[in-house]
Length: 198
Image (cartoon, rainbow, N blue to C red; front, side, top):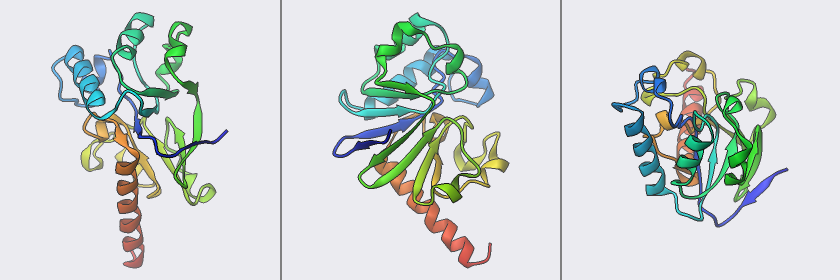
């Protein structure tokens, strides 16, 4: 089912990995320990997301059990939709299902007239099937200037795809307007490169 959001502030994020100490070293996150990381992610989230805003979290939300998830969820602003990531599969518990607006494996939404497909992972065959639809994803932990561990494969993505994960976005959720500006710039660069034969 498609969901349409008009006149509401909508944000996207992914791969917060709350309570995951090993992610700091794995992704070279600039935090001394997991507590510092959690606090920074929560502060950044609440700095941009209001109580009534909508957040689509594209997976790998948190590690741990009910206590850890509930502690984080109690402190976050917004109405949160969870698109399940690979780490979430083993950590989801019924005791906090109702803290999310919805928990799904994938989702199609519309904001204004823009169609958006949400999934934890990027799709390499995506562009042909959904010409005017964006795909937002996480999972790959893109770093600035596309220096993440999957950089070589990410070069094959279409310009209408974008990694909304925290490692790629200053550890902060990004708004629909921010994503729109980023994708428009990617499309312009893609078209320019194709005109120049690159």
